[in-house]
Each structure stands twice: as C-alpha cells, then as structure tokens.
Length: 95
Image (tube, rainbow, N blue to C red; front, side, top):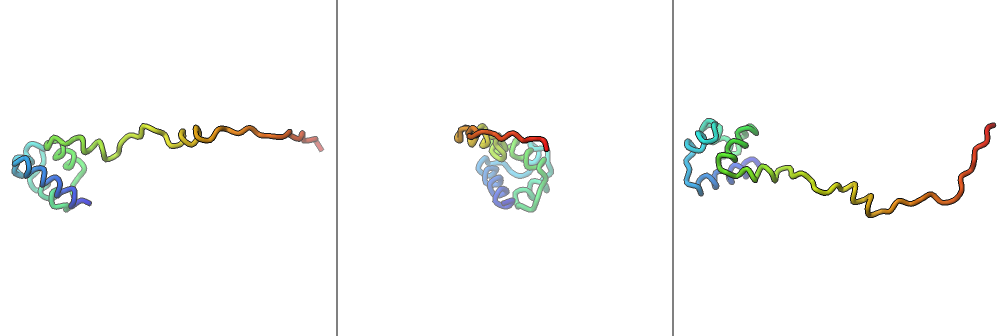
C-alpha cells in the first residue's frame, strides 16, 4: 500500500513537471524524506500531508476517513417499528 501511494505521488509530481528538490522545498520536507515517501520505504504522516498539500491534492486526505452522514443504528431503528408488549402483567405477591 505504501509503495502504491508513493508511486501515485511520484506520478503526479512528474505529471506536473516538478523535480524532487522543488517539491521538497514547497512541502517543507527534506529531499531524503520525499524520496522515502515516493519509494514506499515509510514516512511520517506529517511528511505525507505536507507533500499532498504541496501538490494541491488535499482532497485526497478528505477521502481517507470520510465523516458518515447516515447513522447505521438510526436506520435499523427506523426500519423496525417498535413493538409493544402484549398480554397482561402478573403482579407479584409478597411472600
């Protein structure tokens, strides 16, 4: 997964005709950190966020963990109407 993400970042960087040094400067990270990220050798979340922002693709970050607009529990509650208890209750007598 890391190498796939790194390849996508590298492809986007090359598509925009930006060299590693320039992108690293724009992102505020070292060239070594950018190389590691693109190679999928591991990186910090901060480096990933900075590089993605420098490439103008913050929208990628919003898709990582989207905020749910529908609560699944409320759907099950709405789908099944509440049933009332039937029958009569027995009174307990004190022994």
